[in-house]
Image (cartoon, rainbow, N blue to C red):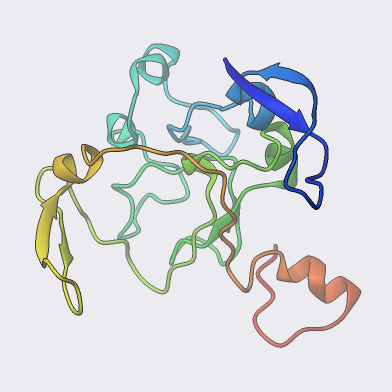
Length: 186
């Protein structure tokens, strides 16, 4: 549980007057935080993998043997996708966004399994064990980080941020006033 001071606006002599205390969990402030593992639809009628497999899954690759039926036969069949995502351009390349109903459930904090995706081709098949990130250019100390090293850099912070694709929700924008660009809606 985090405790937040609610404060009156700062006065001109830099004094802040406490109004009260609010106690809230992260889920109450920003959540609920849904499970971030994608739930693929394995058939057209919305069937999902067996409940015991879903319960055991902690990362997306735990469900790799259950491709979404719409990805079968595409270069991205290996990557589990959440069946709730709205597909915008057909099967391939994979371009999706979460339905508004799901965003409302999470108070617009999007779990990674429902994050919007914009692709122009196949997703590179990266593995946690082999993927590295190179930090170079005009930095004082160039380095190469493995994924385990990257996640163990301290201190850790979680912040709600806004990340938007310029074409996100363009269909709705075009219904109000025509914009330039592809209509990313179904």
